[in-house]
Each structure stands twice: as structure tokens, then as C-alpha cells.
Length: 365
Image (cartoon, rainbow, N blue to C red; front, side, top):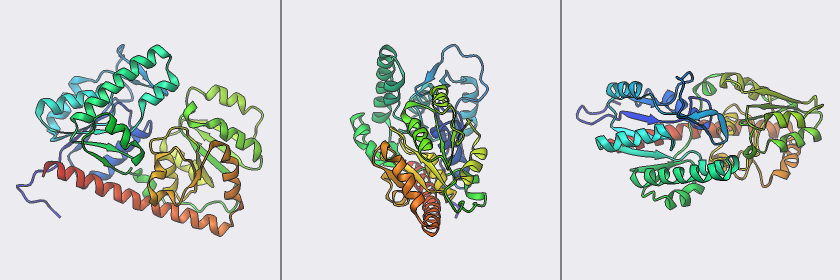
């Protein structure tokens, strides 16, 4: 259905400090833009490129030193904004790109939306020394307060974040879903292996991910192949801990179209994190018809439509028990869980797209 000629059309500029598809935030907007293009054609993400110029004014992101917060290429962004002529600005991260988006929205009196994806303050507490942590958290808190107070809407991905953004001064907020990778929807699914033969994990090899509990589970279930996908600061120590375990494999970081093959070959995906704003990788595994075991600290379980098809860890020590409960299921029960997981993920994806279209259209109506 076409819009009346006199009704404005959303022209949306996202500003993100994350590389496309490199982490959960980068993947979110890569997937969102791909799926929204048919309904909101004037949409673009301004973010760092994979190959960037040497930049001395840069620092590693908390929890992911493979990515850096860098100063934006103003010439490239100015050209892109001139072509797009946005009427909605969305700051995805509180770094230099997000702040540039805020300044542009303020200067041109545009609708400004802030998205609160990652609790960087908590990550800084885990990874940085006291001095660096104090400086980083002061900056992050000030920017988050500025964004939340200035935003027409602050977007969050689970209800547990409401008190936090309200403490930052958010006047209006929306709880919004998460899109799926387009090829996760298009690629035909594979049937689950009949018995539990392989279990996988994908994410940063970092303290908040509790990967060591997966190594403990691999020691217990010697008959199951465990595959750990990802890079991170704990990689060397985790590999050393797993020395002499033939049923545990580290693949390093994989492109998402390679990761999908690992997921399809597995019976289950694990996400035992201490801190997980949503947990996109578990959601994506559900879309492939794979059961997921997820910690109670993950935002994904705040969505009832998804939670009822997830095996929830009440504490990290229960990972072995959860895997055993999956093994104890009949083949029919595991197949039913797989089918229900996929259907729930597909419905959640469609709901998410509808939420975004409604939000963006309401912002300029």
C-alpha cells in the first residue's frame, strides 16, 4: 500500500560504533536494514569500515579489543547524509559515531532516538583497570544521560533495562524486538541429529560468557562433540584448559554464513553468560530449529513468546543438568522443541519488523 503524496516518508540514519556483523549490535542493524529496505527504502547505517585509515585517536571497546572506538570519517559521513537527507537519527552506541549522530540531530532539529543495546559500564568494570574504568564509566554515564534525556524515544530490548534507562533520564522508551539474518530465514533448515552428538557455543571468549562452564560440561559428556566459535581475551587460557580433550574444538571467529553450518550440525546451542542484553546467537539458533540452553541473565528470556521454548539455566552450575535433560528427552520431544523454537523465532522476527515500521512512521507523521 503506497502512502499519500503529502505524507512524509521516513528517511533514517543509524549511527553505530560497531562493525557490521562483528558483534550483536553490529549484526542487529545489518539484519534490520536488509529486511526493512522494502518497507523503508531510505535507510542507512553510518559506522566504521572494516578497513580504516590509521587512527591514533582510538581505544579498544570494553570486552572486545578486536574492535576500537575511532573518530568518524567526517567527509564520508557528510556526503552520505547529504544524499540521504534524514529526518530521523538513531544513535546506536555511546561512542564517537553515536555522539556525531546526536549532534547532527540537534543541529538540524530532527527526531532523535537512542538505542540502549549493551551495558558498556558493566563491561568496563570487568575488563579495565580502576583508573581506566573510572574514566570510561564517567564518559559513558554522561553520554547515556545526554542521549536518554534528549531522545524522543530510548529503545531497549528487554524489560529489565527499564529502571536503568529511567535512572539515566529517559522520558519515553520502547521495548523493541530483534531481527534475524535474512539468510537464516531463506536457507532450508536441516533436521536435528537423532541423538545428541554435537553442542555448540558462539560468542566472545570472555569472562562474561562463562565459557569455562562449557569446558566442564565437555569433560563430563565425553561422548558429545563440543564446538566453541569465537575469539576473545580468554582464548589462550581456555585452549590450555581444554588440552587433551578430543571432544572439544575451537574454530576461532567465523563469518555468519559459516556459523550457520555449525549450528545446523548441532543438537543445541549454549549461552551460559553472566551478562547478555539479549542473546542474538541463541535467537538465531532457534530460527534454525535448534534447542537453546540460555542463562537466566539473558534478555531473550524476558520475551515470553521465546522463553517458553528455551531451556533456562537458573545458575551456571546447572549446565550439565540442562544438557542431561535434553539428552533424556525422547526424539519426538526434541523434534517438537526444535519446531516450536523455529516458529517462535520467525514470529518474533515479523513482530520486530512491524514494531520498527510503526515506530519510524509515527515519528514523522
